[in-house]
Length: 186
Image 1 (cartoon, rainbow, N blue to C red):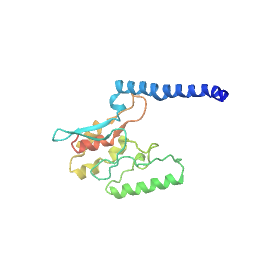
Image 2 (image 1 turned 180 degrees about the vertical axis):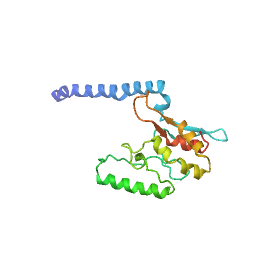
Image 3 (image 1 turned 90 degrees about the vertical axis):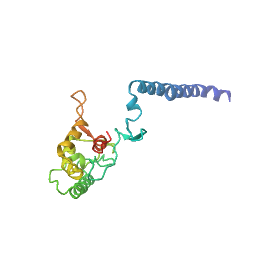
Image 4 (image 1 turned 30 degrees about the vertical axis):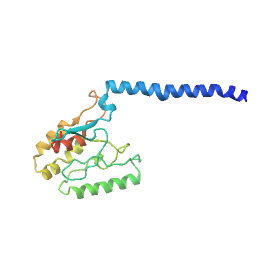
């Protein structure tokens, strides 16, 4: 029995030590650093609006997509992951179905549908669309809201971000922020 405990002692001590270091100390340091230097991002980048009575209401995260389906709103990427091969028959069928949906949803729009409106992102929760996908929807949103296309364009431009440091990534438009601005909440 003593030999078993003697043999297991290094394993148990290592387990407890690594649990304390990796499960308590390291996460505590990373969380503290994030709260200190990136408080908005580390708390989920929550968009909060002030209501007429002065209270505040959390609307959603600017980092996680929310589904909008009414014609008065900008529509984001399809939800659900699509880690399918670009030559996959299943992906081609999904694209055809989504293309038909867009044609039915906005029959007056005869422009080519941008690819990001008919393909999901790898995560399935991409909160942004390309500037081309946003521009594709301008006339419908303006028509449905009975406002000028220039007003819709101005809102879209306000919530369009460019490449990181002018080099990395692609320009994108935050769908939630655009829709909140269209509703006059931002």
